[in-house]
Image (cartoon, rainbow, N blue to C red; front, side, top):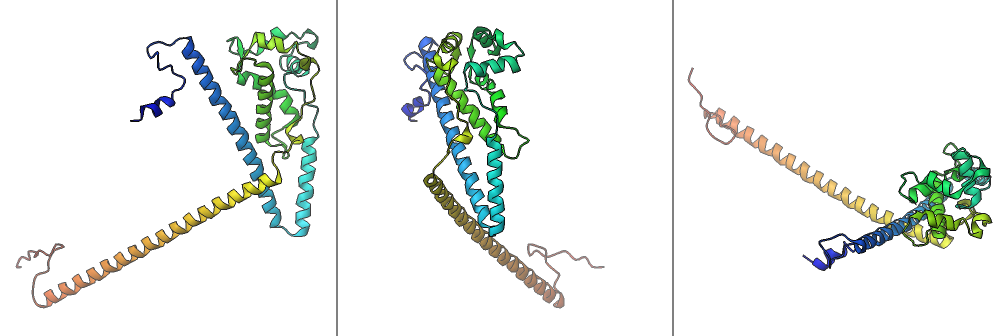
Length: 291
């Protein structure tokens, strides 16, 4: 066993102190968990980009199957749905005073004139552990996301909505989470409310205002898809050949069995003609009692 390789799987453990769990161990565990979550977020962004490229690739491939008239109709419909999706109310900057006040008023049902950051924090610290974690933060953006995305609308993509939620959460964490432990303390939250960005934030650019990929990236992705499809086709062809070979062998065995049975029957008939008692399956003589 490669013990060094095994230990690398457990970087969050202090191997010099295997008997006790102390503050050093907790720090290492938090760092390891944070690193894992950052990797997870990065992977989610990459998967979303692939999703958007695949969506565009399939749209273009579908257009190729249409005649000129139908193609123009589909292009016109696509542009119409795009404009319809982009026509939504203004989205507040995530984590800004305007955004939090909207949650305070519409979700919490409180008077916007009575907005208090400390009370707001305690209201939305759902499990009362003294932190706003990532799930509690993401819940704050639901009202903003509902301005842009509606599951009933054909033009609104719910996968894009979850990517927007992730972007909002990452943005707020970068602004507020000063010690980068992916948890927002009350102190960090209150300090963030004193910044100029909290009171006078920049406008928030939603996903429909951004380009997910370049034409070069799309072509590269399509080349990868083409290679994967070729590999799958090769495997499918190989499996088909194997299937045909197995069928051929099966047919050959069936023919041999049939031939064998025919030979046995011919031998039995000859024996009967010669007055010899018929034999059993293993060639043994069958007992024929005299009547």
